[in-house]
Image (tube, rainbow, N blue to C red; front, side, top):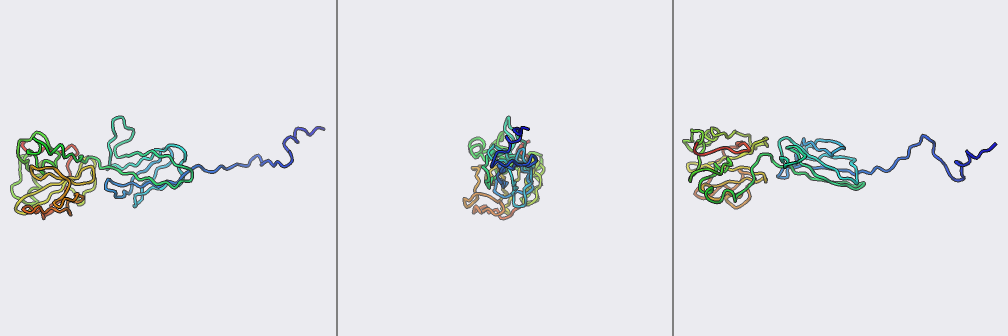
Amino acid sequence: MSNFGRSAFSLPGVVRPPSHAKVHATLKTAKLTVTVTDPCGKPLAAVEVEVTGVAIQNTAADGTAKFNAVPAGQVLNIKARKTDYGPVPPAGGTFTPGETVDSETFTVGQNAAVTMKLTFKGNPPYEPSRWNKAPVIGSTNCYAYAANDPDGHPPGKPQPGQHCGSPWTTLSCAEVSRAAQCDGFIPAPSPPPPKPGYYPVALVLAPGADYHWYRLDDNCFWSHKPGNTDARNVDAAGSPVTNPETANRNYGALNYTVFCGYFYVPAAGIRTGLP
């Protein structure tokens, strides 16, 4: 009786695994930590982070989301999104408002770290060249600048409440605030959190002399335009304005010692000056 059919699979020194055995290959993955911050570098919690086709997590209090196994050797799209932030997608863009995308490729076993920065959604860009030339420079002031309303004014200084027909009458936080709200400014908490479709501005007072406004631009710095002079993003000491409450506001004859509070302005700006 021939045994040829069986002996072909029983060569000396060759051991075959049972038919049900599984051979495990090394996982070709990497570990990934994604840190999400605001434009100022502050970690953001509760941001949805997605590694496309792999997993979705929310960032913890320290702004991080950890993924223990992401595919290596292929391009991955990492998305971070939070409703109150931007950027607005460009023409033809594939992501939604409040989302930023980073494409990365990782190696096997890599402990990768990616930092993603969300931008404020609705804040105006810092454009001194737009404001510091005629006729805009001589027809706008801190109030028009805070309202992001550069064009179409006669020479002079638009005043809070002028456009709505109820300008301010006495120099006080309450009265200037009332007049600005008449034009469309909205009171905001301190400090003002991001508000979709709006940007924050701040009002200060030099008692008995003047009021002044600052606005938060999309670069994380506050800027302002004193009267009919240049727009700038530095304080009286020449330092960048990162916080209007703590900025140096002492200009000698005008010392803005009183901080009145914050307001929101719609992203499209508000019309100021003559109706």
